[in-house]
Every structure is written in structure tokens, then in C-alpha cells.
Length: 328
Image 1 (cartoon, rainbow, N blue to C red):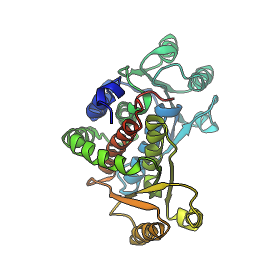
Image 2: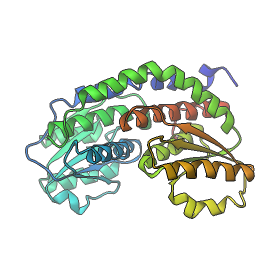
Image 3: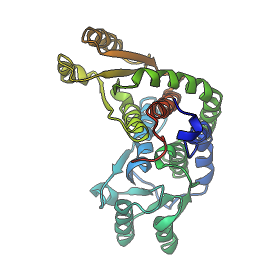
């Protein structure tokens, strides 16, 4: 491998090392952001890396609903030029664009303003913040200078704080700060683990498997590998994949490596399926690496596993001589 600094021209390694600090910063930036009213649902309009945190937030909220910690509400993603019908029904609308220039998000924001819908903006600047200022809408200004897909902590923390401000969830400040502190302690250990995993993926197409509960985590692993290492990657979830995709492994048409993200608290039959699937794939000369998701709760499992995925994508990119920062 070439000298790291000669490939990683924008020092993405440091961005990943610093990423745990984003969570607390996101909370801080949104501490006074709210709009009048009570809401039954939330629509977040955003694209690409500005939308990924919402997939994770939905996973986390589902765990809160199951433990009766918060009243259930719909969290809806909008990835188009116009608002869904839910936006008009007692709804808080959040417009998320790291650059502040995403055209789909800006068009949706203009629709919300035209119809006087409760709205909040989140961006580093750009047209989105200008529109919010011109229309007296509350907004969060995030730190700039990194790729949107690596700004997940800022978005996650900010939106969590907004939901707490609106009394839609209880205040999770202590949990989020503790998470960030723990990730800071683990980041270099996970770097070493991710580097080793990346070595096993060189020359192969990664396929990420997880439970349906952690579908969003598997999807983000796939996206990070696509954009950082500029190589194909795919994902799917248990147990559904055993009812269709599994048949396709009877005749694999290339070199693949399966990464299975295993949550030890999952249903025993799902865990059994994961191990059986790994055994069957090995018979077809397709290796599986089973990774036990680390953490005492859903929030920690999400972000520990994401951090490992960041390092895996990073070192896979370096193995190919690819600058891991630009999204091609």
C-alpha cells in the first residue's frame, strides 16, 4: 500500500477519528430550535448523506416505542421534489441538506413555505439557510468542510434535540453524550479491526447482511463502501433473504465476501439462520465474516457498528489506491 497521506489527500482518517464529537455538537447547535405546536408526525426532506441519519433515527425510535419510553409518531423520509401528503396533516417538516443547495430539498421547502407548514431547516449554509432567514423559519447551521456521508452525527444529534424540544421524545442528552464519549475511547481499536476486515475484502464484492431491525446500518455500510472505495457492494436482511436471495448463491458469478452483522439480542431462530447461511455459503466457496454488534443498547450498537464500517470502507479504498473522501 502506498503512503497513507499520499492517498488520503483530505485526511479522512482524522474526520473519522473526530466523528464521535459530532453527536454532542449536533445537540448543542439545536438546543433552542423549535416551532409552536404539537405534531403527530415528522417528515424529513433530504437526499444522499443528508438523509442517511433519518434511517438510523427510525431504528432508534423503534426501540423506544417497544420499551414504551415515548409516544409513537410517524417519521417519514421525503426524497423527492415535492412533499408527501403527510406533511399537511399536523406535521413537523424538517429540511436537511448538508450543502444547503440540494434542489429536491429546496423545492420541498418552497412548497412548505407556500402552504404555511411548520418547518425547520438544517444545513451548513447555502440557499436553504437563506430561504429560512428570509421567511423567519428556525434553522440549524452545521459545521462545514466534510463529505455529507460523514456528517451523520451532526444530523442525528440535531434532530434528536429538535424532537426533544418539541416534546415528541424525552431528553436523551445524557445518553447521546455518553455514546460519543464511548466512541472516542473505541475509535482506534475499531480502526484496527476495520483495517483487518478490509484486507479480507480486497478483490471481492462485499455483501452486507443484517437483521431487518438494523437494515439501515447494513445499507450505510454498503453506501460507504460504494462511495469511498468506488467498488460494488450490496446488502440484504434476515430472515427474508433466506426465502429468495439464498437460492442465488447456488451459482455465484464472481468473488464475494459476506459480512454478517449479528445482534446477540435477536430472535434465536434468526441467529441460527445467520450461522447456517454462513456454513452453506462456505460450501459454495463464498466466505462469511460474522461480526457481533457491540453495545449495551440499540443506540450504541448502531454507532459502534457504523464506526467499524467507516474504517472498513476507508482501508478498502486505500488498498485500491483510491482517495477515500470524494464521492465519485
